[in-house]
Structures are given as structure tokens and as C-alpha cells.
Image (cartoon, rainbow, N blue to C red):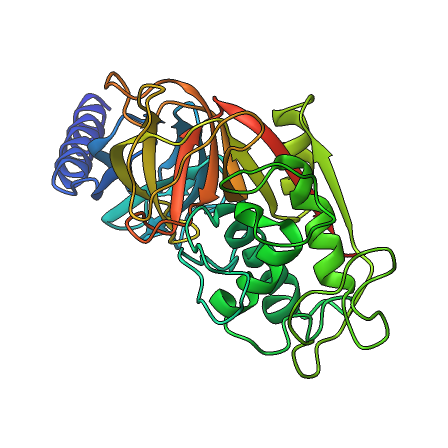
Length: 361
């Protein structure tokens, strides 16, 4: 009996030794997870870098945007990510993976709005002074947006197929730009376009067609003919010179670009930023001093004349360069009408003068 017990014990020891060695000789499979991010935020769970996990491990992911930015998506080896458009998600480690958290500007942006630059053509007798045409230039972008880009039924052929710089001459007449247009606008010598003339001039130009020659009385007929096949419509243009950004934001949120005027225009170049979601490159500017600045062509403002641009978007609570000189602020994205500036410009909401909201119906 004693010998049998010893034999059983020896067998047990041998089995444990063999099994133990067998387990020890089979290594656990592990994989690397490499995490990066674009500008505008960080991956905070786990931190960015390379991490090693056992096969099958479920790893929590959290992407945290900076102020003024939003999370867009995860890209790279995203096949085992539960939701590649969720900033807080999981990934299952079945291989070596490299993933990137992408961030974009926390902005509202109306795409495809034209960007027409001064000066206009000089085909009409009332365009003797082609400078200071920022207001009709800013508004023609919106007219073309509703007509050509969006094909709005209350804007079709509104421009009579004319190039934008030609159509701007007609619009400038109805706005009495440079005091060289409609005599029915407010009197007084001025260079540029009075705030009070932007809306009424736009309404008159838009309504002008063969059925309204040239527009409802008592508006004076212009000293030129109606462009061939121009169509006319009844639009509404609302002037705001009191509410400010909330009015502007409401229009952009509704998908309606608008003309926004600043008391002066002397922005200082900052940096360029490309939004990874829209692909739009935006030049970020700050304000210079309130000094007269000679542009090409010349532009000057006083009283209720400001520099008019086309508002196409905004970015809330944005610090575009972190600890750099650009301020943390609400930025508006606009199309300026100087050839020297790029299409999209972001400037802090300051030096605001008036807004002109267009509703084609």
C-alpha cells in the first residue's frame, strides 16, 4: 500500500511539472495600439502614444476637443472601433492598430457662397467711380448664391446671366453707391454706401424686371436699360444695428448668408487653419488699430458707412493659437471683397456696425 501511494504521488508531481512547463512555454499574444490626434484636441483615454495590450483586450477611448473645436471622427485601423464617430468609444485589440482622433472647428459654415472682389466693371454711366463698392460686392455674393448656387425659385435668372462684377454695377446704382446712383436714396455726398441704402437698394434691384419698369413708383428709372431676360422677385432685407451677434447667428443657423458691416477694416494677418471636416482653409485675423488704412483700391468710412463683407459662418469661444497673440473670442467667418485677401477670413466679433439679413422667401 505504501509503495502504491508513493507511485501516485510521483505521477502527480510529474503531471504538474509537465503541465506547468507546457503553460509557461506558451506566451500570451500581445498587440500595439498607437494613438495620435490632429490639431484641436487630444486623446485623453488612454494618453497618446503607443500602448501594448493582450489580444482581445477591450480598450476605452476618449477624445477631448479644445475650446472652439469639435471631435470629428477616428481614422486609421478603425475596423474594431465600436463607433468611429463617437468621441467616447472602445476598440478591441485583435492586431496592431494605429488610429487618429480628428478634430475640426466648432463652427457653423455656409458652403459655396461666392467671393467676388472689387472693383466692378465700368460699363454703366453711373459707375464712374469704381472704388468703395464693398456693399454691392458683399450683396452680389448673396444674390448669386440664391440664384446660381442654390437655384432658389425666387431667385432664378435674377442676375440675367451677367458676370458678378457686371451685375454689381446695377446693384450699386440702386444702392446709390458713391452718391452716383439712384436719386431716391438718401441725399448727401458720400463715398461708399450708406447703411440705410443697402437693404432698399437690394430690394429694388431684385424686384426690377419687365413687369416692374423699373421698380414700383415713385422710384426713378435708371439711365440704362433692363438686362435681357432679367427676372424680378419680392425679397425682404432686414437691417440690424442694435442686436448684434445674436441676430447674425440666427441668420447663419438658418442657412442664410448676410451682409455684415464693420466700422473700420484694418485686420492683421494671423495664421491659416484648414478644417479637416469641410476641407476649407480659413485665414485667421485679429484687429489692428482704428486707423485709416490705404487699400487698393482706396476705401474710407465715416458716420454710417462701414466696410461691408459677406457673412458665411461663425466659431464660438475659439482660441486659434493657444497661448499666442490671437484672442479667445467669438469669430465670424466672412468673404471679404479685396483681391489681396483669401476667400474665408475669420475675425473676432468686434467693431461691428450693422447687419443686413436677406430672405428670398
